[in-house]
Structure formats: structure tokens, C-alpha cells
Length: 625
Image (cartoon, rainbow, N blue to C red; front, side):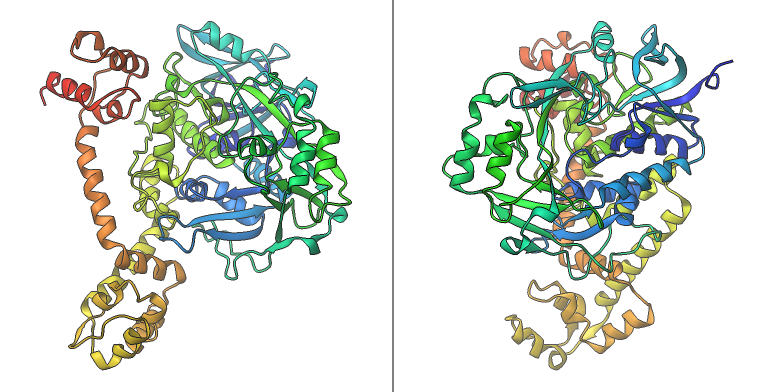
């Protein structure tokens, strides 16, 4: 008798952020799904900092939620602090972030997955894949058990041949206290896959009872905290836990330099590249030698625990150097370690080997998501897991894939960047990577994505109806401003106070509201507006949407027009396995890159590194355009 049913629709390997979203998506869409992980006690473990969201990452979490993933809901339910970053800038830059309770985050994810129909669990290491004629048939475990599947999603994180470094010491492991995963890399290489090595790191965890917070700068949450999820299931925080900030100093830097000769980063033992935008403390003081101090953010790991995460002090220096240097930071004079920081090297597979669905080009039915694709960050991983899980289900059901374009979502930008340009260092999302960021705001992710996900079969009807009601109410409020007139004597005092020129005759409220100096807080002081809001019982989200639609109408229209122009190139399809050697006028580099990437549209081809506008012209001429 077999331990498992005959054939699963989807097997997900690994239960980090990517694996959890992949398993939940596939199961919620109706696929019989198995989640296999080396340790069921570390499902959704926050391996690095205890936080979700941030610049561009917060937009991704909102998008995951709008599609029907769980990261937003879990983040809300286990948050200890909320901040909307970049609020002083335009709404395209606003980015939500929560400080999380690490233990409750993992617990909430596990319990939520256990309540998900169609989802089974198994604890063991997957050591190989079952492949026949370039098609996935299942997985093999370290005990030699074969489990059959119609599709497999690999979300191995940092576990593939993981190697941990602390000073001169190095040992195999996928995370502190957990062993590495072996076997899969070597097998994939034998099938023709190209692999590489990447590095990431983490700071020491310390005992909060040993810190003097009076010597640090307090970092409270927002006075009126919001939340990630559009779902009514979660509520904003009513109380929050503060973070703190301190700084390194020239003395701290000198103490750290004492260990540079034993640093695996500087003595050549670590050869792979780490995340450019999250460097280790030794890398920072080496690269930015002119700076005499760097910020450290002191982040609690939960409501009740005394464990503290020292954000900004990621390091692989010897533990005695870490300890001595940290004790010279203000407030850390008597610090006690829970564990030292470390670096970890692991295998990844350049993502140019994937399709937009995250299915591999070489093995049908095999999907990669998360750090195996060269990304860094919980949010980037979770979004890929969601997309891979959805597409694995859709492929098994022989339905159209779920693919997001660059003007539809940050997730679309992320995946398109990965498969079109590849990455040689851990990829992190930024707002600057998105050319349509005015369209891709955190506030309208539900409007952009919930209808698409509902059509694909994941987002619920209730989600869709909630979104439609919000959009309708915001549009009606904007229409109210268009239709309603206001007299000079009603508004000129406010205009003068705000430094805006007075009105000489009656005009529509929309024109007044459009002025850069005037805000919603000014408009609701007018009786007509206050009455309309009260009569229609409009909430904060609707008011915010209406204000953005009024204030940024010109920018939004311009970006939509640009996106529509690009869509013309997106509509010109390139035949599968197109032979670029036939186009003799293409540059040698373009032929080489296009043959490797195999873009599906002219638009995607134009984004391939090394392909010039003249190369695109050649292709357009060949295709009769």
C-alpha cells in the first residue's frame, strides 16, 4: 500500500513564503496538492527580518492579497507595528510595511494551510525529480519514496547545497540549525539546466533585556495604522510595539576591521554575489569608508518575546568580533547574544530558463519560484510562489495561463525582468524598476488584479464585489465633484490660506480640488461634501481613491496612453522556437540572446539586454510590420 494517492495535480517542494503561497493557490483553485518540506515546524519561517512590505515590496504584498494569496492577511493578523513609508511623496511611492510577530506569523500560516481543502503535507527531503521525455512525473524523497504528480513547483530557498559561513568556520545548512538539501541541483544540471551560486546573510539576534533603549531613538508606528489586506477578515492595529534606532561609530568600524582577515567575504572563501541593496556591515564600512556611522534598526521579534533583530548589522565576521563591535554601539554596552550573524551560499538557477508562467523551458510541468530564481526577499518569493501555484493548476486543467504584464502589476515587472534580463546578483524589487508606477499603486491593487484573478478561478466573488463597490463609490464621489458648483465666497478664504489664487466666479468643485495646494481635508470642510460623504457612508479607502483619481488624473492618463502604445508591440507574437539565424541583419549579440531567451512577443524582445532598436526594426520588417 502506498503512503500517497496515485497522482497529485501539484507537488510543492519547500514551505517558505513561495512554497506556502504556491500550495495555497493550487489547492484553493481545486488541485489536489501536496506540500513537502524538510521540517513541518518551520513552515513560513521568517529566516531574516521579522517584517513584511517596504518600498515596492509593500505594493507586492497588496497585489498578492488582491489576487487571493494569504501574505497580506497573515501579515495583518500577526503585525505588531504598521507604517506607510514615503507618505511625503506622491501615492505611487507610498509603500505599506509591518513589523511582524515571527512566531505568530509562522503559526498563522501553518494553521491557515491546514484549514485549506485539497492540501496534504509530508515532512521529508526531496532529493530528486522523476522526469521522462522532458516531462515531470513526480519527486523522489531521501527515503527513496516516489510520489507521482502532474506538475511540481520547486521553492527551495537557500537550501540547495546551502553552506553557512561564520568567520573561518563553515558548515552545510539551509538556515541556522537546519540541514541543506542535496541532489536536486546535480540532477537538473544533468538535464541541461545552468546553475550558479548566490549569497545572503543575516545579523545577530540579541536579548532585548540586555539593551538600554533610553540611549536609542524611538521609532513608533503610524498614528492611524492601516492594513495590508483588502479583506474584511482583518482589522488595523489598535496598539503597536515600537522599534528603535541606533548608529555605528568609527570605534565600531575599527573593531570590525580587526576581523577582516578572518572574513569569508574578504579572504576569498565566499565567491558568490550578495544582495547589492542589503550589504553586510563589513561590506558597508569597506565600500563606504568615508562614512563614520551607519544606521541600525532595533526590531522586536514579537509581542511577548525579548528576542531582538539588529537590522543593518548583517555579518559573517567571527562571532567574537561581532560581539565586541556590537558592544560599542550606543545602548548595546551589555548586549547578550541569542545567536551570531552568518552568511549563507546556495544554488540558484538563472531565471532566463523560465517562461512567463515560471514553468521551466527544459522540463514541462516543472516550475521554479523564489530564491531558486535568484531573488531576495519574502515578498518577491511569495509573489512568484502564488503565480507558479496558479499556473501549475491551470496547466494541469489545460486552461489559459495567468500572466501579468508590466503595466498591470509589480509582479509582472518582477517576472518579466527575471526571465527577460536574468540576474547575476540577488534581485530585489524597487519602485524605480516599474515604468508604470503611477498605475501600479498600493491603493488600487484590488482594482487592477482582483477581476483578473476571479476570472482565473482564485479570487472569491465576495472579493470581487467588495472591490467593485469601492470603485463605484469612488467614481461617484469624483462625479459629484464634477457636477457640484461652489461660489467664490465659500472657498476664497481657504484658497488664500493655502496660497492659491482666489476664484472670481462660480466653478465646479473638481477644479478647486485639482489645485495642488488643496487637499481632501480642505474639501470636507464644505457642507455639501461633508453631507454627501455622511449620506453615502463613505470610508477612508473610498475617499483616498477619489482624491488620487482627482489629483493625479493627468499623470494616470499619460501612463495609460504610454502603456497602450507598448501594448501594440506586446500584441505582435513571435512563433515558438523561432530561428533567429534566418535574420542575417540582426547583430550577433541579439541573435545569441534572443535564441537563449526565446521571447514570446516583440515587446519582450525589446527588453532583452543587448537587443537594440535597430534589431527590433529588423524583426518588425521580417514579420510584415
